[in-house]
Every structure is written in C-alpha cells, then in structure tokens.
Image (tube, rainbow, N blue to C red; front, side, top):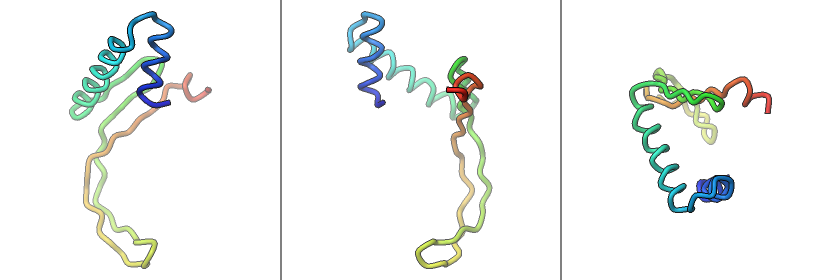
Length: 87
C-alpha cells in the first residue's frame, strides 16, 4: 500500500474528502519525521519510531572482497507493537 492507496482507504471509511485526508496524512508524516530526529515517537497500536546511533565499522565490498570503512551515522528504528507482530 502506498500513500495514495492509504488516502483512498481512509477517505472511503470515514467519508471525508480525499484532499482532506491527504492533507492530514501528509501533516502526520511531516510531524513524525520532525519529531523523530530528536526523540522517539510512540503510536499506540502501531509501534515506536526511534532514532539510533550506528557505530563506525569495517565492511566488505561483495563485488571485490575489498574491506571498506563505514562511517558512524544516525538511523531510524521501528519496533512494532505486540498486536501488530501477531498479524
């Protein structure tokens, strides 16, 4: 499911116009993205988005077998709720 399909599904179930639902979902995504830069975002029934720090490490180029340095970086971790895992 992509964003357009999500908008259609929510609009169909709620009776709101697709443009209204699209605006709400877009704002929700923007708010989550802005907040998760600094702190975790927990959505009950869905899961938790949390920023994590990845340490620098040595990796291997699979094509050549050459060792390469992978620099430290920030990443995003999603942990689903127990009810979502069951599905």
